[in-house]
Length: 291
Image 1: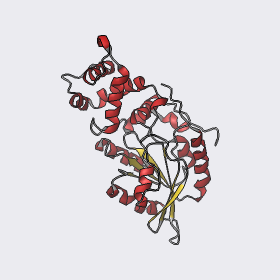
Image 2: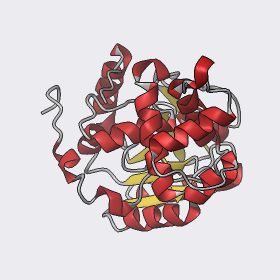
Image 3: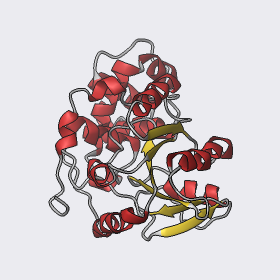
Image 4: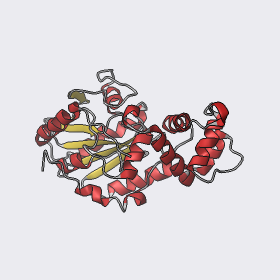
């Protein structure tokens, strides 16, 4: 599957991040808790590799809690790295952020705030986080990716300044599994992906990882043997049969992906730390603009 979506404002965002980093004490990287590896940005990771980093696993209320715990442990094994599961609309989960940033930026003199740069892919919840930390609506929020278009600075308490940046997706997505996970999660505009292809991938992945959730959600009498059979079952139950009994796979894919993204299938994670052992080639991605 080819995903071709890299708007011009994202090039500007990368330049802004590179220019801002020398003045930054801590990097806050927001990840989708359902796919923490696939929702990271290897290019930006290279740019910020010498900065203490706080990984925020956003949308943790949609992710499998057992797998989220595995990711927290995985990230905290890395040097100068902390990780927290959060829900951007639940202030209780956000309370540890300021304290953790101050711990990571312990070298900063007490006379000034710790400067933390927030970055992440589109639609991961950065604008909602900024609004929640600020206690007021100062960043535009939307259900479509790439809503934030300019850099913003927010003072959080006495000793933390958070700098927001526009969402940045990979300049090229070379790992097919990660591209499907991103598309299935909603990180990529629907108009930039093949809906049926993503639906087939999601059906196969969910059959393998969460068969019971599928049986319960779609009231299946038996587990379908493959992705096509699952989508046929969904189509037959959700208005996806055309005249003559022809299956509308696009309609079935829409139903499945909307249910996945909205949490109707339960708390689902699309990858575990074990899944990335064969994806290490992503660490070698180079950005010609900054190499």
